[in-house]
Amino acid sequence: NLDPIGKWSKVGLVVYDSQVPLGATPEYLAGHYIIQGGSSFLPVMALAPQENERILDMSSAPGGKTTHIASLMKNTGVIFANDANKDRAKAIVGNVHRMGITNTVICNYDGRKFPSVMHGFDRVLLDAPCSGTGVIAKDTEVKMNKDEKDIQRCSHLQRELLLAAIDCCDAKSSTGGYIVYSTCSILVDENESVIEYALNKRNVKLVPTGLDFGKEGYVNFERHRFHPNMKLTRRFYPHTHNLDGFFVAKLKKFSNKIPGAEEKTRVATEMADSVNVAEDVKKEVAVKGENQSGEEPVKDNKDTAPGKKDNKKKGSSKWNKKDTAKKTFKPGKFKKFKNNDGKSKQKKKPKSKN
Image (cartoon, rainbow, N blue to C red; front, side, top):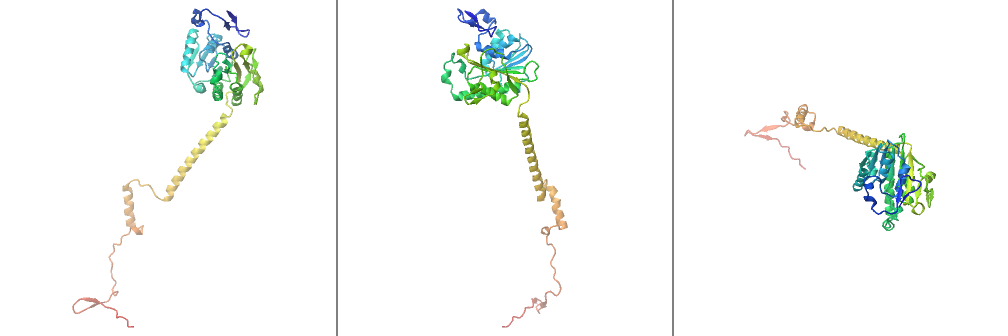
């Protein structure tokens, strides 16, 4: 009831029939094996982890690939097993403990934000969430449940995750600098298109996966035209390889610089400087306007009171003057006549005759 999964793997076995559940045997509980699909071997084989390396499995639940990496590393180095789903991450904990792995750190972060948490890994494995069109044999409802919007949503998420995986990898690593991208989908929008996007956005190149079988990735597909090295990727089909539909690509990072990042930083700096200059100019104009108006802000009533008194004394302003001088009459200005009664009468001018 047992057969090797194929000549391409020395550790994989196919179980055709079992009298007891494979997940309840003493050997399983003791951590001697793990149950997974045959296609799950492929991305780890392409990653080719070495001992004492620092490796990130960005989307690792339930932990089959993580435990495979740990076995190839012989429990040395450090593996960071991350998954955005906290409940699914619990399955990683169970499998890691059961398999006796001691070099793994399990974490729960959004993969798109992982570069801000940690970077500098020798190798990164991204088994991206996908539409599942390669496993229709296991789940026939995929054909009815998925529509075009779901595919576009998956493709957008995969692009963001792949860029984050590349940013987590260290191009200066002496033994690594490799990123492996895999999906259980056979759609071009989730595979070759995502790799083409990464080639244009980051300093990476396609390298051979190291897998001896599988069909080459598409260089031309309908209206799409991809990079000539896209033939280095590998596609697997159920009717051809007796595996789930799968896609594997291996990238080599040759520079930690992000194309266009310096230009964006320079533009952002210039815009910030221009905003600061504009604010300074506004402040200077406001200060000049206050000086030209000649009005000084009133600080205290006591300070302004003496100024008013001084103006009155000095007579600097004619409006502040008060006419306190008594009026005097010059002699001869008015002629007065006294009557016998002693009363003074003013001489009246005779009326003119016509």
